[in-house]
Image (cartoon, rainbow, N blue to C red; front, side, top):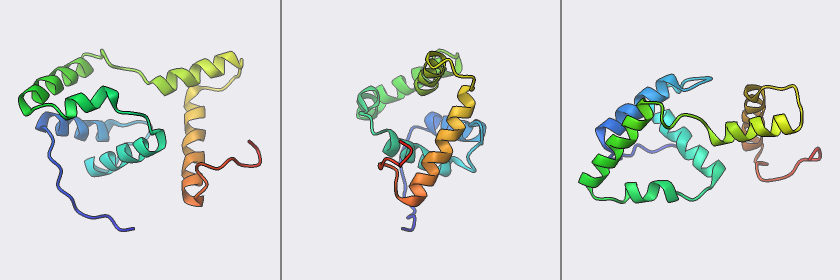
Length: 130
């Protein structure tokens, strides 16, 4: 499956935020904003959650959308939106299991397992160890 060049419109401040996010993503930054957007799409396929929190803004008129995105980015820059639900949940599970492993280690192992399963075509299948 080869990639195709496509053109997508988005508000410029959001594109700039995507560029910065791609550059500063940890533990490994994306090579460019295109790879970052590809990564977000892959994440969406993996997570498959509804978009209740985002669809209203995305479908709004341009003036309303610009205002909402401006406020969203401002809140992000102020640190009002920091944190990850998955990382918090991983931390809780580690604590409940009284395990001696850091959330970073669990995330790293999850990323390797997901990649291996994607390559093998076994992402949704249980393995013998499960």
